[in-house]
Length: 128
Image (cartoon, rainbow, N blue to C red; front, side, top):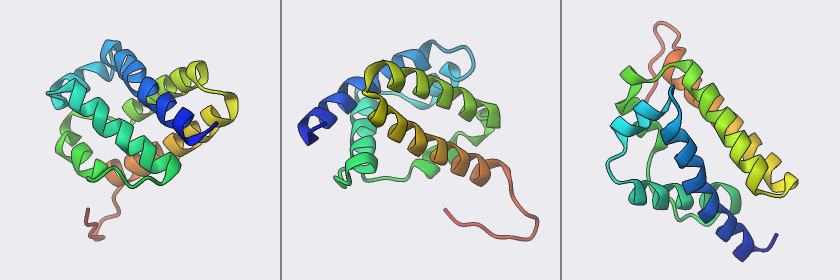
């Protein structure tokens, strides 16, 4: 897949994914609370995935901070649901090699976020 094809695929993938997220009974309400401007959110996440997958550096921000702001609404199983939807959409929309790579990156992120948000060792100070 060329760089232009990859960028186009990400630009199509992100809104399709969040359409499913918004309709999901478990995680949809969290996103409805957290996201005020869906077009802006889509643009930021296109930049995020472009940075993650192609090293473009377009994304500026802290995904962890966004999740920490909504920690009281998030449970660990929500990351599993997010990942299941991600796997469905990437599997449907991308060639298998690209889907597998994006799924692996998303799986690592989901695990990292769950650890950071929900599993703390007493007496250890963590900064984000």
